[in-house]
Image (cartoon, rainbow, N blue to C red):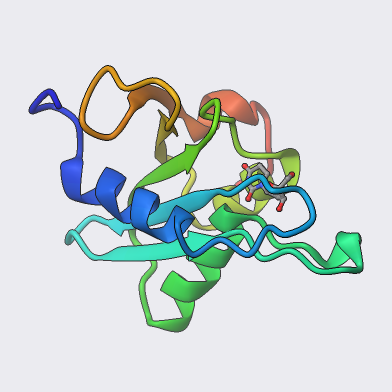
Length: 133
Ligand code: THU
């Protein structure tokens, strides 16, 4: 893995993915949010037999972090097959706390480095004109 990738953050997202509860879609997602001071909060998707009650990994990570007293987020790593971008709901919920968030997308299917292929995007570019706090 190249040294400019946030290794502990990506590893945390991969570990969180292994905890995903996704019996309905079989699509496992892990996320890990990092604060400016370096604290990492994990999250995984939580599905439900009533499909609409599903929570994405990103929002689980955010709730986990905020409930533990963390706010000053700098980056999130998201691990999935294909390295998917956060959904619209997650983009808006993340924007509430982190207008300047760097997103590392891990495609677990592409092993070009230790954690899989990683692509970087900015949250602000994914929700231009979105509501800011
Ligand atoms: N999912 C996430 O957890 N994060 C995303 O960014 C995309 C989708 C979950 C929700 C659901 O459990 C499964 O992936 C299929 O959509």
